[in-house]
Image (cartoon, rainbow, N blue to C red):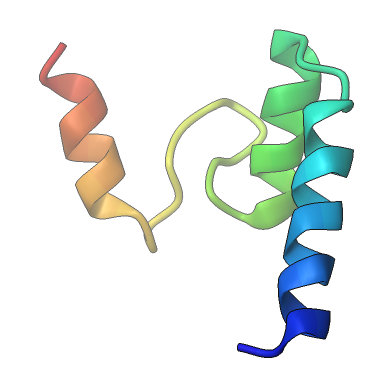
Length: 56
């Protein structure tokens, strides 16, 4: 990984730290990423996450 790539990752991490961390904002990011649907259920592409969350 080049120094330029490393700096991009560092900058991205700093940006993410400053983001809104409310439950609604987090859910919106998960829906946008396709990890969960609008009802809060994991999508079919993430069965391991779904089974892990049901173990609680």
